[in-house]
Image (cartoon, rainbow, N blue to C red; front, side, top):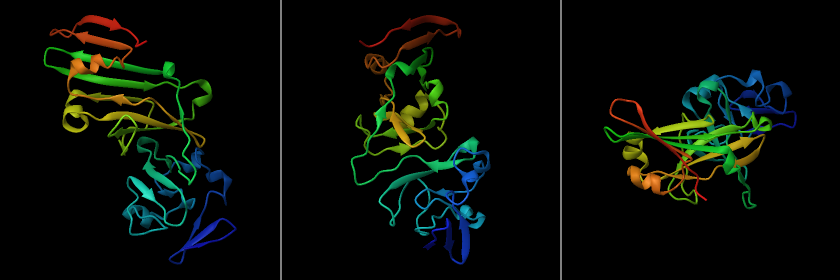
Length: 231
């Protein structure tokens, strides 16, 4: 790979225009709303051929899925297809310095538990509310092995401020795991407090994580509505 000062990158005899070379292609701009894969490590738009095989320019033998470590730069970025938004951007970056992140004000996070008690089904719903100056914030929900956020695994389709997970999904995939969300606002990273997931509905209530718990009866009617916050 050859990186030119002018903002173009040459790879395998092909020229690629970088974001630095064309301000109109900046992230968040309408011109960026395309299905091209973007390698944040080199600020490069890949060709249509490279997109199909999901390869990274800096290390073609590594698929651009999940966490991708660029061997040429001291940073780690997650390359994510923005699902319905058809936009791709680095989720976060890490340098040699200790990674810094702020927590979103918990008063701005809404957690709801909905129980369909006639068959034991329930739903966990979390809304990472944002303020007016955070409307451009980008979200990525993930599952972690611990409350400390170790071994994060992004939930690919969950890139919006609200997420709902069914009890079936928790039983099959996430029992005993932690649900978190990493929020990117123009390069500044925020995290919401991670939420413990368990297939045991009573244990979920005991965690006191939910501001609202709603119960429905066998006839589908609202049976009770309990709201509280953990002090």
